[in-house]
Amino acid sequence: MSQTLPISVTVNGKAVEKSVEPRLLLADFIRHEVGLTGTHVGCEHGVCGACTILFDGKPVRSCIMLAVQANGHEITTVEGLAASEDNMHPIQNAFWEAHGLQCGFCTPGILMTLVPFLEENKDPSEAEVREAISGNLCRCTGYQHIVDATLLAAKKLNEVAE
Amino acid sequence: MKPAPFEYHAPTSLEAALELKAQHGDDGKPLAGGQSLIPAMNFRVAQPSVLIDLNHVPELRHINKPNGAVHIGSMTLQSTAEHDALVAEHTPLLYEAIPNIAHPQIRNRGTVGGSLAHADPASELPVVALALGAKFRAQSAKAERWIEAKDFFAGLFATTLQPDEILTEIAFPTKTPRTGYCFTEVARRHGDYAMAGLAAIVELDANQTISAAKLVYLNVGDGPVDAASAAASLIGKAPDAPAFKEAGRIASQEDMSPYGNVHATPEYQRHLSAVLTERALAKASEGAKAAK
Ligand code: FES
Ligand code: FES
Image (cartoon, each protein chain N blue to C red):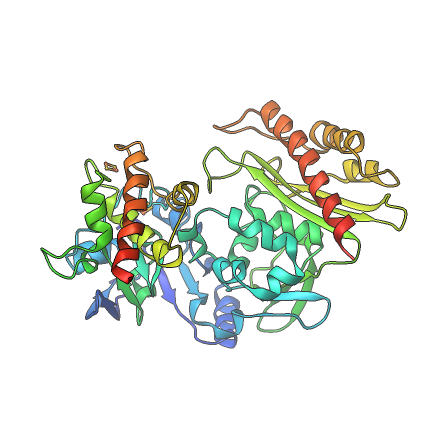
């Protein structure tokens, strides 16, 4: 019988308590145990960035962390961004308006990478945006519209702040 | 589930961690940031039977400067060191190198000690540690010792840490007078494994000639590659373009034997290493002139 451990994780502000095998990856915990399938898994070895979430407010790849390591920590997934179904986060609106996605597979990881980036960089240059998303692979867009959407998001966020 | 089953321990003190390491030896794999180990476990290339998660050991996370060196606890996050004032002020080479380690998402989990103990020849920190002559503190339940960087790396993904030892701290010597530093690398995509790169250190004497030099390269051998003959060729010379070019030639043709990889042939790695040597030496020399 394999070992299971009780863990308690705050997911998008709600406490979640489960018993898990130590080898369960955090990405699989989020998708299969918590049922939040917005966090995507592409490569499952830390290369594509699709599984990026916020761990205590910082972007990390959830496919190369164990769920047991999130015990006592706070995580935010893409589902935690919008205030409600018809009130999206400014960055989500910007991606919608500027066609920052096509198939959308990479989008959750890109959003979770960019939210903290834009908090720290109010007025990023195109080069800075490209560097910020260098750890996220997109097979569809050619990145140009992602960059456009990010610059638009920066503008929107500044407007909200004013 | 991707990784094979293992027994999981999350000790909350160094004493408990060392006890577990003594008990499990080579079977007990320390889990630091997991940014290399967990991918390997997902592929089942690595199947440790026991994981000793060091993330809850408070003694292993610190940065301080007791005397002549910046001491960094092995479990300090790379992103913490990246934004640390002591690191920025006293160890400019380390400060310049850290942003080259993978992507921000990785540096938010990856640790300074984890990367060094993993000893990937393509990684940045081993090169910096060897160039600076850093010291590694290895502790076991019974004893502790300090290992010189040149004695720490033991080939591909190998170190001289013993089965009952854990790397607990690394001491990076602080910058010295009239000395300049440069870290540079080239990757196909920002944050990917570099095809070539190096750490260069240049010391000038009162007459502005080179009195000491160090050149250490990544991804062109079984570990960080110390180009000793290239560095020796610089001694006594003026810091000028012909001297840098000659050092680049010696380093790339005589001091290294790159294997090549999917992104670059061995010849291309030599070419990049030579060009980067010239740039790094020029920048380090400027730094040395400006340094008091
Ligand atoms: S699924 Fe995690 S980085 Fe690709
Ligand atoms: S939109 Fe399809 S992968 Fe990015």
